[in-house]
Image (cartoon, rainbow, N blue to C red; front, side, top):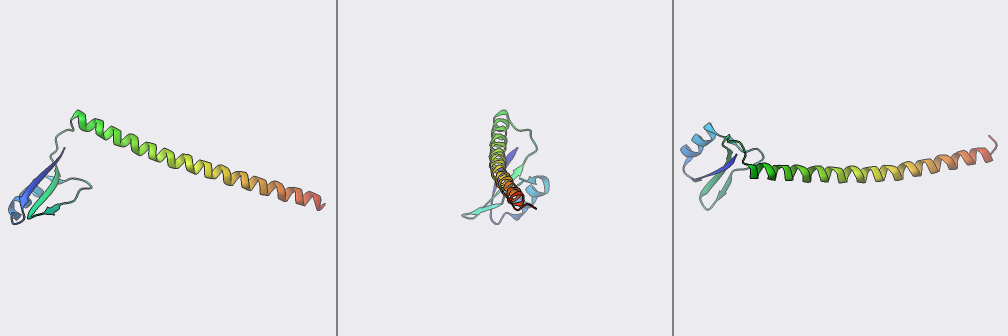
Length: 100
């Protein structure tokens, strides 16, 4: 589970000890503010039910966004296909009327 440890900026031993034993949280960054260093890390404990619900909500939102992109792409493809068929039919009609 995501945790955050805060250190004085001069406490390199404490920061090194944490990062030797714990994994820096994926996608997170070490923050520095007002002489403090905040390090987000994974403590290895399983997520709580509340965190699992939050993760499921995030996954649902990601899937919805991907579906919207797919639906938009399909609409664009339908229009491109209709335009191509219209040009094909016009070319065939022109070819027939030319008697070739």
